[in-house]
Image (tube, rainbow, N blue to C red; front, side, top):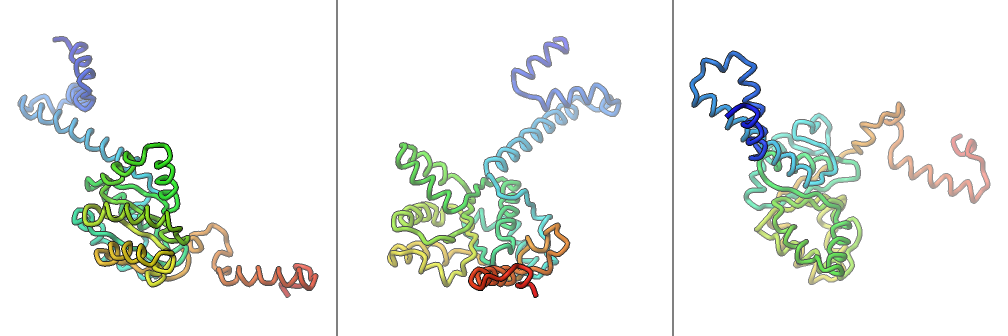
Amino acid sequence: MNEQILMEKLRELRLPGFIEGIIEQRTSSRYQELPFEERLAFLVDRECLRRSSQKLDRRIKNARLRHSATIDSVDFRVERGLSKNKFLELGTCRWVTERVSLIITGPTGAGKSFLASALADQACKLGSTALYTRTSDLIAELLLAKTDGSFKNLRKRLSKVDLLILDDWLRDPLEAQHAREILDLIDDRFRRASCLFSSQLPMTDWHRTIPDPTIADAILDRIVHDAIRIELTGESMRKRTSPLPNRGKTSLRSVKSIKNSLRERKQKNLTPSQITK
């Protein structure tokens, strides 16, 4: 069999790793003295590595992560209540394989979504599947699926995800119908697959955002007892990383003060320059 026919058959078999390996062996003298078995093993390893890399790329793409974050890109120097040892332990993703959930709470800009994306990226690298979604988007998707007949397929697809990230968890109070959908979803995943809840609200405020106390009890009972918790503190990471030169001089509190001053200006008919004096 000549080389051209061999390459065509390898393409038909979808073995581009073999093709790359053969070309490398042909152009490099270091392979010439190796026995046949070692050269064949090199080709097999090359193809396995390519397929493994392809699967990883697919897992990360399907995860639809909000940030291109990795464990190595997390800044532990910032004081925000994040324990480096605890986070690196979470980076082993043993909690995902053990089907335990994770709760990350903290003020706006504390880096909750970034940390969630970094952990999901690591889970994908270790062979698990992940999916990022805002809670409001997921609710809308569930309700739409009920109307277009795709609800069962969506529920089945979600149940196969090893790590489901629910960002902006309970940012808005849940309507009764939405709460029931969330309860069914969490019940499907309870001790079968992991969830990561990212929320600005402290856990003590979660119950009041769910109008039906019975459903609220049922949802929280399936979350809080089997979840690891990270409580972030400190000022906004967006403020810290802003490219503007005066980023450290303006806080959220001062922004609110400016808004209040603008209201006073409208009432007193003052000019903006008079407000800043």
